[in-house]
Length: 132
Image (tube, rainbow, N blue to C red; front, side):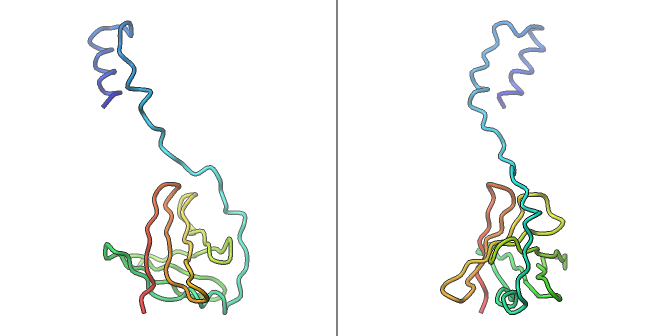
């Protein structure tokens, strides 16, 4: 809104002289991922991977399935899309093929996996609970 108004005023006046640019200082920068954790892949034993296998659901009705395929996990998204999960910590995985900053972190209550948080960049997080 601010930039659009300034652009129109600049065109109408033909000069930047006298433009009220105070609104520019109020514009917040769009966050973006600064770290690329792609190189930090670790290997987890199959028994540890199996703990994360199951179905997860969000409050908005979103459902995701996690399955093990060989030595890695896969996330099955809507419309049958499948992506490999690369372990970067004991309960944190990078989503292969997604932009930098897309992760799944599994939540635990004691020894049981209770849910997951999907990170889509630095500011968007979706929480899903593990289905029984």
